[in-house]
Length: 379
Ligand code: PMP
Image (cartoon, rainbow, N blue to C red; front, side, top):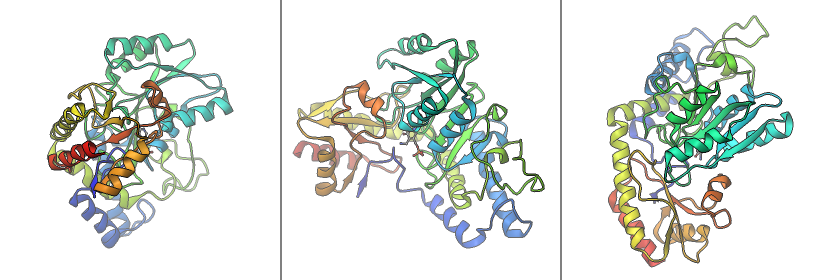
């Protein structure tokens, strides 16, 4: 199978990640932070080490700013539901995933939270910035902005959007699901308020891992309460992070794998990974632009302007049918349809037909791109 569905989750995982998961399950899989025996201490140490690696990977000097979650959706829910109250207004980009739109819609229904979408310009960051500024209101508390669109690969100027919002005292949530592990996210330097991401995509960790990185734990109400192994004599949830947001047994095995994922990224270097993916994507784009059957929507991918995704359609063929053709005839795994992002599809008018998405990882090769491009000439 040739796997190009890495925007959903990366596959395969690096050998070192597989080994770390195996070691956790075979050698020391005790419940961390609960008991004082050697195995529990080893588990706690693995979790602490991963937290420290995550903090420095995201340019944050405080490991307690890193909250382990189940996935990016979980991280986003912690922020939206912990921060927003009755009557608050939110600005989102028009490329947001349902991981943002659905909790926001629930808050609209239940708490009278309102939201406005700001259009992302594919041509000018200046225009995007102005659209965000124009969408702000007196009661805007938060701006939510995907770093890279999971459908179109477009990179948003999140550094500038954050700086602009801070002039008005507005917090910013960056959805880094598609950018973490590919683009530099310097949380402290860029003063990001909330960075939400998955551990199982570009960070090469296992599924069931996610991260929330924030220095603003005091602004967030808890989303869930329970046992943490600390302050057990009190019914009150611990007030300090990470325990404030990490109730119940953590995903030790996943976190052990994620920790190896950070080591892998540091060893290879994210710039190297980005260059590799860009080489594959530009080669594919060039081949597709010669194929008269293909409809491309975005500009030729360039480093600094996009992430590791492109989407297209085959003329007169439904995106799901095209994906099934690749699956059945060439054993190529891609994702079609709406990619949980109807808003992003509206941006290019593909909300009825969806699109075929190609998302390579560090493990894809030019030979695989070549096969895909040839398969698409035969469709
Ligand atoms: N945001 C974006 C931009 C995504 O691409 C995804 C995953 N497709 C998510 C959020 C949700 O991530 P997870 O599946 O880890 O919850």
